[in-house]
Length: 175
Image (cartoon, rainbow, N blue to C red; front, top):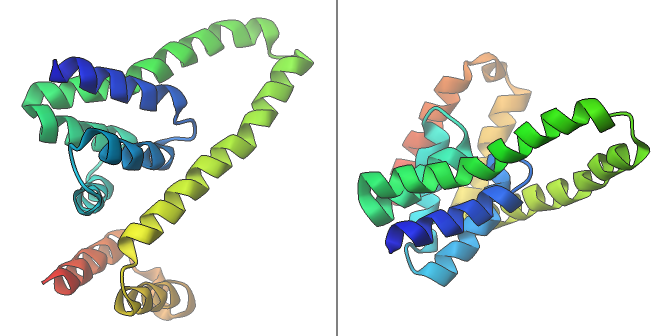
């Protein structure tokens, strides 16, 4: 039964999270509240692990939650469910875009989706901000890191080095 619920929940997320991985985060926050599978602290850890591993954020999060809830088969179920709606939609769009790509209504519909995608991503940013910036110290750390990345010669460092610095800072602040 857990696999059906995982499939249902992640199929919904895959269907409505237009805009990629960050757009899945508001849905995952809501899923944390409704399912009881994880709390916001666990969600923060999942985001950190998913951002630090190769692959799209949404897929990594689905795999992580599915594995957390239902083991290997849960991870597979959640991942397939998240990807399936997008796969079906992109196949249909590719098929019909050749026929209707110049249609003004189709162009207008794609144009109208942009604000919704922007809103979903902004909601994800606000949600992550509320979870991740828990003290003046973490806010100062984030501001300092941004200043170093943009306004000093350190900006030329490889992004992987910044990722390692961020992971180490996270470990230090969580000890």
